[in-house]
Length: 177
Image 1 (cartoon, rainbow, N blue to C red):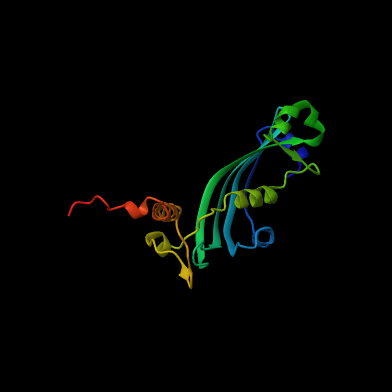
Image 2: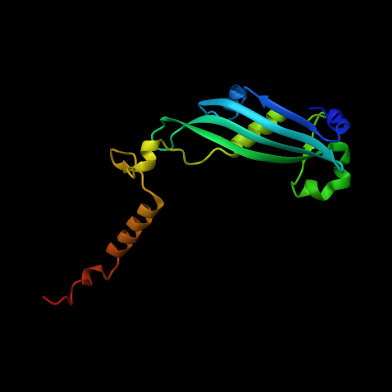
């Protein structure tokens, strides 16, 4: 969206776009398996030297499970708000730029596709599980290795600490039989 078009429309430019950005997303994050039903609905407007981009982003993203590497599709739907400033106006709003509250417009254009890709990447969850994995507490394991939760690991460390204590051999010394 060209900044000149945005400035000409005081009420802002409304958009509703269904995009195919799967290849670009996979190029930026190879763990992504698929991206479908990508839709952005919103408005971009100009106010007091700032360009305001507000839209509702929805899509289905397929990622590998954090445990089993099985494909898991998650549906996302959330609002996105970004504020841009023209490169020529940076000096007048220097404090906003320094605090990373605004993005600088390059080539006199706001690239909606880049904004969408950035926001999808920022919202990829660290923990992705299949429905069965969510219900089950069993973790993957193999020969001489096992995956532990943080709680299991801490409990194991505490148990080792107690077993390796110099006073461990004294336990039970004064038990009454």
